[in-house]
Image (cartoon, rainbow, N blue to C red; front, top):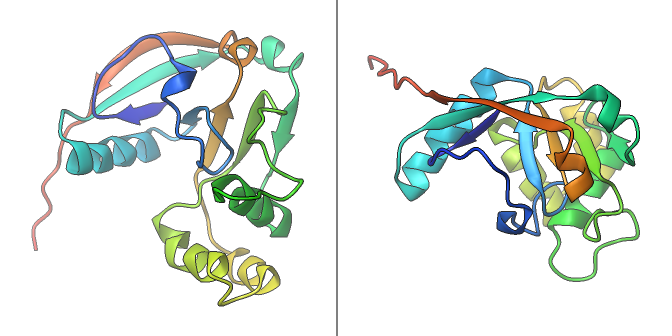
Length: 168
């Protein structure tokens, strides 16, 4: 699933932001709830209407690609994300050059944003960051970085996100 403020059926890799968690690419999640939250956040920031695009992923295509996988938030994941987000001089372990067709790993979302900012500003070490986040349940994201990787995705449908109002 991919949450957005505008519907689409085809993916344009050039629209991706270079300094995202796993580099410039198309990001999706296996969680409908996460995609809906993302759509709502984009609407709040940019306007539009919350939409979720559903895709099917062909595992046989993925098996022929160069993949990088992080099963849980760990020190290596944190260093990789920081290096991809860093505008100047990323470390050697990054994906700014699309050396990986697809990267799978946890989303550094709202639950980790303060903690990640402390780490990015060198207020806490990467080891302290890894220790504090090890018990945090996170959504998984899949980022597709090359034209070849997009061949694994098949558009299914656009879904409207139903806005729910919560009582205070």
